[in-house]
Length: 394
Image (tube, rainbow, N blue to C red; front, side, top):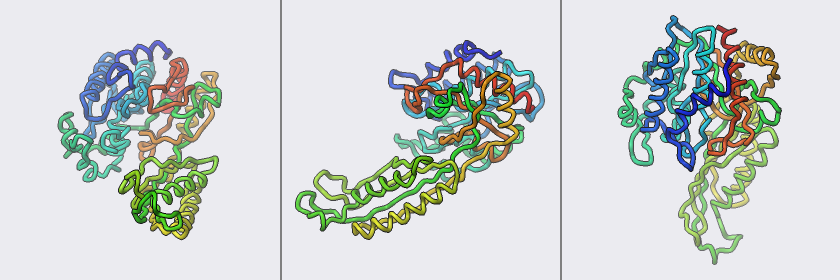
């Protein structure tokens, strides 16, 4: 039976990689990433699994039995100065599940799930299902001016081979991911873990505002065409329109001339909106468009808001969810279903193969930061649920 001690032992070798007093930093295609890959290979070998790397850089720990297999896992990369459980917990649990399973399972660590270095989230899983725009991502450069193409080559992955990644999906019968809850949702249910019904719908909006630069002291309020003030009002309205069921975030704002004594003339801002379903997003966007027109008329600032991307959300496979719920019942645990508002590799794989997720209680409610926390007893309970479910599905 998978225990907290099993997970602690596996985490003990992985946690120091990229760790400092400021948090965990294991960006994709870096030395820290290479050290994590070496940990993966060592751990797989101890469990009698063979490590292979697909054309996208995803790591596979494969059983001796002939495939295709059900797989478990997550990712090993992190955001800058993040927490020690995000992604890593799912890979560690994957190895524990494979070790204790009565059926042959594969363990996968997807490459560059966070996208923290090149803004390429779920890179490896998107490549695996054939939904990665390779010409776009390979040309991207990091803060040091290193192109993704070069970084992949340095890490031993041929960027020209990315087109071959989807063929590896034929090895999968399905995939289940265990992950730390990145909110307080599971904790508020008073359960060690919860089954994810689906991933939230998501929209990214880009707004460009054009006003007129002028003196901050001598320009009367009625004479101003302040692009930043109009942008601020748009951000506030986006939040108000979200209501209690969804969230809207202004994650990035660029201002010109960005001077303390000058009225802003140009603003670009990005809004990230997430909702349980696409109908709430559509209503939010309709309200935001109306607000933009009203602000334009009231402020004299030209305002153009466009949808940069939209994802209608993911509903996980009913059979997988049922198996997870039944497995939890056999463990004597309730199996509440929740909607997850973060993106995950399992949500990408679900577009091509049966997939599911289990989120482990995070009493801190903190993620992407050193303060995230998981009780390994809860994580072990979640891992046992996944193990039993995948055994039944297989």
